[in-house]
Length: 480
Image (tube, rainbow, N blue to C red; front, side, top):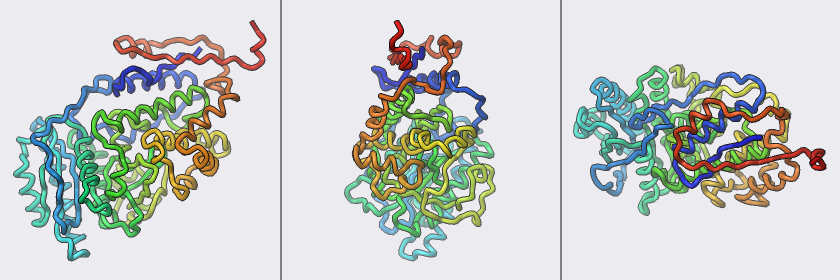
């Protein structure tokens, strides 16, 4: 007997969703055989959000702007349009670290502006819109604006809003609003950066932040050699999401306007949870698998990680990247990337961000059916695209996704026939051959609830919905 708690409940609470995923993870670990190698967490939890103790105790984030947002109107001669998510803690020592980060990143902006204006004489200024989160007293906006002018006389920094507590969503929403303004040229490119490491200053965060900032401000990201590029960053990956790890990028407004609003608690948040819920259900039915990676909220794009998945969430993305193909994620976070490692190109050119399960990787190379059903290949992306955007999330017939992912040709035929219902159609048509939710597990051990599961559910007052699936082998049907 397998009892699987799922995300289907009367509430859309992200907190409960994360708890349910934690239980599902422990249950899958029990059912899977073999020992897994450890997978390092490459996605750091420090991401310009007022700190919280844990995801199980995550408070609702309420953004409190100091005034109503004005229409965003950058100067017509702007060489760069930058949106900056800045977090300055209230603790004096931590605030000093954040101000050092701010000064360094503004210096990077000024350096890039000098390089671009030398190449483009008609574009002689840059505008940086920033949301200040946490503390506006230690280094107030007037001093920030003065620092910008000091670093470059044509660099204008403008406060968009001050928040005591907020997430990256407030700045991403500013970008979304700007790109959807009627008077915004859809060919306009906007840059998103944040003060990574302003709360947890580590060597990894410092190296990662510097390289991401350098990349998105580079002339080849600001003005890509191939204008087809929708989004540019240091490195674009495809494994657990179509993503720029660390979440800094330069994007074209014509692409950004296709995305759902990243507003807290909005449609994007709810549909991200819905897409994961669908996958867990299909995996329970035995029709999709996730053998390459563990169940983790950063891989699923839940909690605050949903914002890191936002920019790559539409199937129409035509990504490009600055790092040459042999530059690994490890090289970036250890500070080993140099200008000679830059080689702009259209993506995708790379796949995995983190260490994957070796046995699964080997098996998938030769098992075509496993490739077809692997969540971290094409079906997981299709499920997300279709859940988020419906028919508008169907990749075009010329999309890079069909040739890049294993089993792309097979999925392309299904999508051409069934559109945004292709994944659901595959699951239902496969159901007649389905015998067990975990077909590789033939053990008949009694189901047991371990202490971790009891602890997770003991303090939950919310109603849990249980889906109970019983499967009998064909030869057992005649038995009483």
